[in-house]
Image 1 (cartoon, helix red, strand yellow):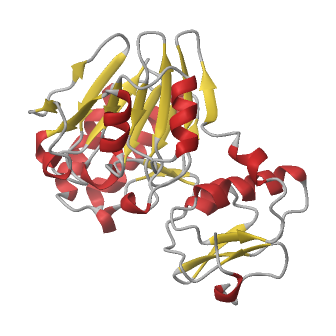
Image 2: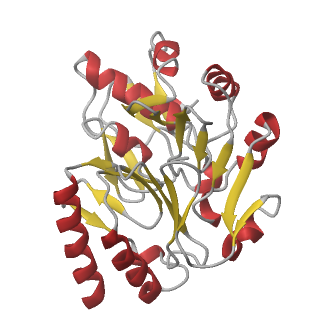
Length: 292
């Protein structure tokens, strides 16, 4: 829990605060943008929650903060907020898609996702290994596969794999971050993996980066592609492109052939838009990347 004695002076006074252990990962601003804002190299509270909806969002941010840098002076509703995780994002006839929460400092606060499927559940990238998530994943039927988009967001994947006997998937280009993985993607070809799941290598951010397309609807994008809530457009992050911007641009262009309506990133905001809108936004992004 955050330390009131280390509360940042940028916080507005009130129940919620951020302390100086904040790493400016953006998790809280994604979950509760009406409460938290970026101030220099930190997040801070610029507006105290005034409604039950705002308070719930701020409590979710508190629980998901990877460094426990968010505090509250009223803990009465924390358990109720915890019970919401993993947080259901969308459901269909064959699957339910959840945001795990409990972001890990090992992945700089990256988001991870859980998919409940009739033929076996998936974990996409890894949250913190917590007793709450373990019990919830058990309730939902365990984990069959763990898909790691790239080396940065491995976090506690090994612990979840050992607990649930899950098989873990990674590209050979990033395998050094998780050498225990037992399903290794060796080349740059997209491939179908079980029903309605396609694994698509997208080198650029890292050499072995991959995305996962589920049901031609949900694209789990790791650090390859995200939505920017301020500019309201799709973005790629050149400043943290560790391998090759040229390759990342090619990988982005390759995604133009696929249909999806959800973008579910590790870093940056998720978004749900009509497929036609996504297609147009993707084409605009590729054009910008080619001239950047």
